Amino acid sequence: MDDPPVPYLIENRVILSGKNVLDAQATRNLATDERVVSFRLDSRGTARFKWATTQYIGKPFAVILDDKVISAPVIREPIEGGTGQISGNFTAESANDLALLLRTGPLPARLTIAEEAR
Image (cartoon, rainbow, N blue to C red; front, top):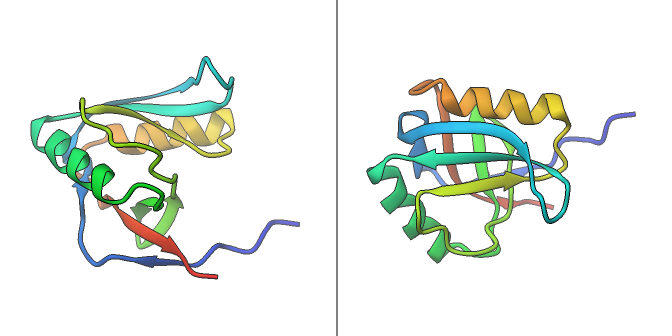
């Protein structure tokens, strides 16, 4: 049986959109052997992501498509260099799907700060 969806409280502003993502690839974290999505941002996305990941350490950063949270990894540390990894119980298929979604450019995908509502 599937787990019920986790409700999130989402800030009503977009931190990054697909147009800020230069590249995204499904890969493995060598330290943990978990599947992750590595990404690289443009200069505007780098500045906005640095600001957000500095301000919101410990908070989920939601990836939203068609008004549904498809991933909400927790910000562990400031990400300053324009590259990062999204982790969180990915299968090979789900990591590939998220990487493809992020690479496709300015679609209705957005990344924003979220909070789990329990």
